[in-house]
Structures are given as C-alpha cells and as structure tokens.
Image (cartoon, rainbow, N blue to C red; front, side, top):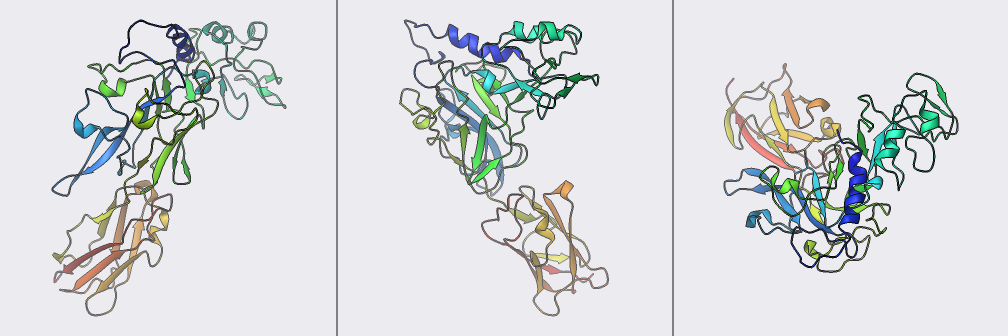
Length: 393
C-alpha cells in the first residue's frame, strides 16, 4: 500500500536538490536539463551451456560501477522473461508524482474511486479532504482539493448519499491519520509497448518511488536504486517482439520537461525531451516441450496423456483441429483430444482415445504447429517436432 505523502515528497525533494553544489558525486540527483532514464532493471533469460535456462535480473539499459559483467546488458537483452517480469526505470532526477499516481477516494469520483492530486496540493490538502462526511463540504474545497465528484450526473457517497458534481467525495482514510489509505498508478502514465501491442499495466502493483540514489544498499541491492518508476505488466509479455517504454507527455520534472533516454543511460550525453528511442529490448520466444518423455523416447505408454509445457500462457485456440498432429510411421492416424484448461494455460495434454489407443511398438511424430500461439497471437519461431516409439502396452 502506497501512501500519498510520496506524491508530494517527489516535488519537495526536487526543489531541495535544485541548488548548485561545489562537488559532484555519482549519488547526486541531476536536476539540470531534461529528466533522463539512467538505468532499467528487468528479468532476462539465459541459455546455459547444458541447454537449461536460468533467469537473472540485469541492467537492460545503463550500467553501474558495482555490477558484475554478466549483469550489464544495456540494449543487449534479447530474451526478456515474458512471465512475471517487471521494469525498474531509474531516473536521474525527481519527477512530479501527481502525474504518476492517484489517491483512493471513499467512492467513485468519475469511472472509478481514484482521483489525481492537483499540482500544488500539499499533505494539508489531503488531510482537509480526509475529514468526516458532515464537515467535508466546508473543509474540502478550492483548486487543490482532492477527490471531487467529476460526474455530471453526480456521485454516490460510501453511505449512499447523493453528491453533486464539483462537491467533495472525500479521501479514503479509514485509519483517520489524515492521509489516503491507498494510491494507484495512473493508467498510461508510463506504457510498455512491444511491437504494436501496448501491454496492460498492473496499476495496483506499479508505483513511483521518489527515494533512492546510485548507492547499492545492503538491503534491496540494485532494486533500491532510484528515483524510479516500477512498471509491472498485468499478465505476461508478448513473445519474440522488440519492446520500448513511453512516458505520457504529462510526466515531467518540476520544470515541466519530459523524460528522455540518453545513449546507454549516459546522463552526460544529450537527449531530446520525450524521446525514448535509445532504450529497447526483445522478449523471449514462445517455446514448448514434451515433459512426459524425451525426444526419441522408447516404450511410451499407449493410453497415457502426452503432456506439453509452454514457457508462457497459451491462447485457447491451442485445442483447434490441426494445431497438433500425431502421425504414426505406419498404420492409421490415431484419434485424440487436446485438453487445455485456461487456468493452467501453460500446460497442454494430448489424450489418446480410450477406444483406439496408440498402436503398439510404433514410431510416432508429434508436431505442434505455429497455430499454437501465446495470448497475443505470437507464434513460436518454429513448430515443435518430437519423435517417440510406443511400448507393447
């Protein structure tokens, strides 16, 4: 749960760091010029010498003097993990948090129960809009008031009372500490785009962290570098696509300048406000394998399900006719069903028909075609072809 105080903290600390200093340090913020993307941390898949894979969080953009060589992958990530990944976008100065996060209100103020904090608002404005319903109209007003009804038809309070457009709904403050009980990332404030697909953002898990610098603390390590936007996708990433991030034009520093990405995160180089072209990465490919036996296996049971495992969730069209074929070296092709449960969307079962099991002591070729795709319709780079021989039973 993120408290609203950090929305104002970002602006207040930015003002403090605006003064000139006589010395430079790698841990200093850099308020001069446009706000720059300094580093990006994300989870990358590596294929090991034995053919197995392992995941490692790396610098997909920028660098750090304390990083190990295998962690430095600036613009070299070609297999970003597609499932349960997140991006930590480290910025060289503070951004205005009001355009990155919004606060929880007591009930819906527009199409949901979250509202933006007006520029210029302070924690005192949050507190005066957190008071009890009976004093709320007299306490929560003016241009910096928060959680104001935006619907022309009015809003409904948490107790069912009608609230007119322009009147306060009230900040959600169940614990009565004068601050909102929750914040949420603003939709499209920062977007992850892969190919021509805008990946949905998990607005509850994503957040703006105005604290931190280039020190690597014992607790948190590189995941404590900041200031940072932590961008969490709402589900898997599309596979085998080039991706980039885009900041809304509203997301700026205190001087109103948009974020940009300098070459390899080198903040001593220039970049044009709003231009993020210097940072890209590619996601891993969709891969499938048979997990119930190995390629060229012998003595495979004739009636047991053949289980496939995918690296990412699959689209339910995996069960369509022709997506999977099973061809014997001799004799008639078997009948089978494809069992696919969307709740276990990385597992596929090929179930031979109980009345006509696979032929005994016969070689079969199993082919999973490119019609089997991830949930974004992205296919594997090549069909999966596995050969096996059945047993006598």
